[in-house]
Image 1 (cartoon, one colour):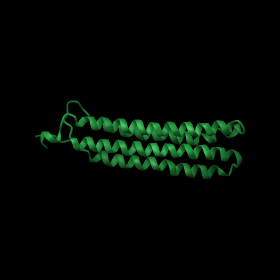
Image 2: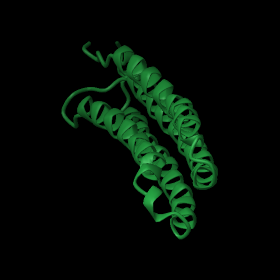
Image 3: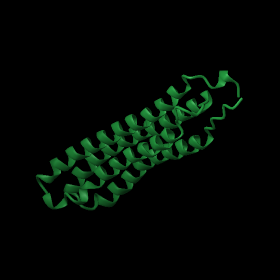
Length: 163
């Protein structure tokens, strides 16, 4: 590759992918945890014996942040101040970070809304527990899809700048 394909600013896009993966997936996990936690707090005043089973949405929201962390560590492992870094690799790493980050934010938002509503419904009707878990699994899969796409993109990022 030529020097035009490996500019000094290319690494900015790789670090932007790291930041996007962590920031957006953490925002989704935080929103999901907060929204589901509000539902648990509201339900816990009436049926405190159901609190432990109602923590499932909070745990699932936390897993979303782990997806972003995994991709961030993988991308950061490819970044080195001493090795050349291509513009292609920078854009691929940015795309991978955005894929896992934005899908994690959507999944966290979904887990929060579903968790809040289902936990409150579970307090009224215990038969809703299985339904709540199934809907939360479908919401979690949104973040898992982003993780899979990001992993595939990360394998495509080659940074060969030898002249």
